[in-house]
Length: 273
Image (cartoon, rainbow, N blue to C red):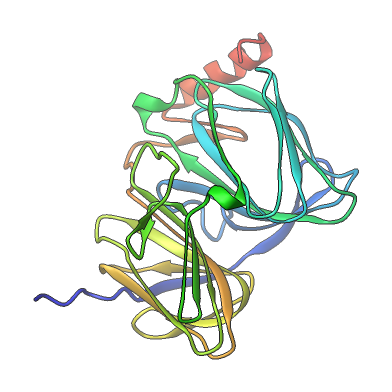
């Protein structure tokens, strides 16, 4: 039997706090000067939003937004007639495709806390019709044993498969380790990825690199990732198959060429989203 090659950590980045939307605070780890993207992931924000702050009407084209609630609620409304609220542990996987205009606003008077991930789409999928996959906390499969809890938002872990459909191979796990617990996850060599630490501190990869709250740790080459912790750690693991296509970005539009970006701006101004 061949032994799997464990992945190490190639880079550790501390997320930056910044303002977004209308007075909202986000801690951004992907989508900054430090780390522009990790193909196919374009952005990762940990958001903290209290009314009246929020994200009023804004457009998207050419990618997907994935919102995962950690505390509180968020209410979504778009120009296609879709409206709903996601609560703690719920996920909304929105494919913006050819274009959508929506708002994302806090659903409680307290601080509403969660993650928003932007996932690029291959050229062939960028102009598809918008679509939603929404799962409540109870609908997200989980694994719980020996101090290890894994919520499988996308992909597979411990033989348990997620319910979400992804256009390219993607794994999105929310992992909580109790004191002295260990975790191992297959991350095939054709995928790129990282972990982002929400709380606590752990030792990541074959060289046991320390990672703590607000830090992103990028994987180097290999086929699996191991994590240990002394006092407990809470993190998300994200891996995906790189699309390896040209990327043109302007705010909420992500296409393959500058011409397509210009067309997106024209279409939005002309009310074609």
